[in-house]
Length: 266
Length: 300
Image (cartoon, rainbow over all chains, first blue to last red; front, side, top):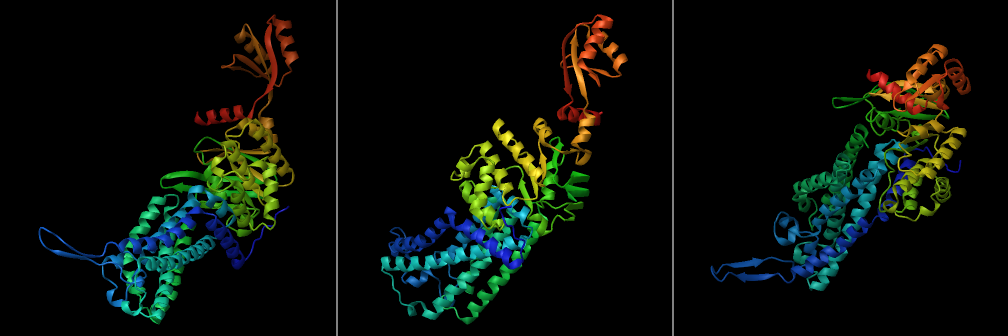
């Protein structure tokens, strides 16, 4: 026999699964498209909205309308606690949009496993569904982290091009707060990753079902994001997201593994 | 030890019972031809064996262990319905993923080996979606062979294969069986199956209708003399009296005389009754005929 099949313990099994998922992810064009979009999106938003700002007057009624646009580059990352729930352009078109992109990517990545029939090969030789869910959660979290980092870099570039202020104090934040905010946002992504992953394991080859479900769940959670990850985040928010995100993912991961074990794979 | 032992297996999808108290034994090293009409439960049984769906009742043992046991699961190669490949990946990259899943150390060498076995060496750099149906089937078989599994579960693997592909498939499976690999293969192309199978399981309505070794099938499928005469009805009656059993084969218009010698039959008819035989040949009941008869008996 040329091959050497390992029947190993959990650590080795997970390592193998991670190797497969990482290899698959980074040979998949979609991941590079998603990363590219994450970098380009803030540049486009900041540069294009810089032409929209100001006050317009309706000549018939004489009513003045003021369009609030980005004045500070950090608004693309988030808003300080007091403005967390505002529904203006800067709150709606910031880094939080990425959560939807992450959810769609999760559905595409997992859905492709079922659409191609790859899961038949996988689950015939590997009976542990939890390995699959855990491995997927980890690699998708890594991809989500990459997307957030690229968005951050894109926001800096876009802000520079649009000539926005980089003054941290002007948005009631501090440099440490912004770092804490980014850490919180990245770990909060685990909530979206695990929800989308669970829905993708339920939807299986029905990609539209998992994407619609993930977007609906995202809409419900969208107003929570600024509260959990404000621009002036502190230790509390970081601890909440760094612990809460993985715990939430662990709970939903166990549910996903259970559902995979109880339903038909193919 | 038996490679597969199934006892009282049932699988119900809502109201429909796809597998109904199935009992099945596949000896180690057998090529087990799994036969049945569409919807008889073959694919469902194969998916149950591979753990892709969960049984509603009964038990499946692989080499004496529960089929969910990780140590036995890693010994299965599978091709069910279609190869599970990513369409936009090359054949090579698809195989690299499965090789990694299996924890194969020398991946490249192993992939080259199995691609060579199915004569698909040149297809490695092709995108899977650009491969023809026959190529995809061969690649699916190569997938199943990765890591030299002890059990191959193949669902309709010869569909879409050309004559050369079928010959290669026969050679591979026969060779694997000689080396101790067990093959569970379902197919509607019974003529091909008959050439390689060492055991058969015939399914109907989710139940095992008949399970037997190829020797038993041979015994149940006797050789016969098929002949044509100008006076078919008279000749048939004469031969039945003389040889015990003589049937009319309606579609061909032939008389079939069992357990007899062609020369002896021709001489008997002409010498004693002056009935000339226009055509005569010796043949054997094929698996296909046996299966069709069995199904017709069941319907009656």
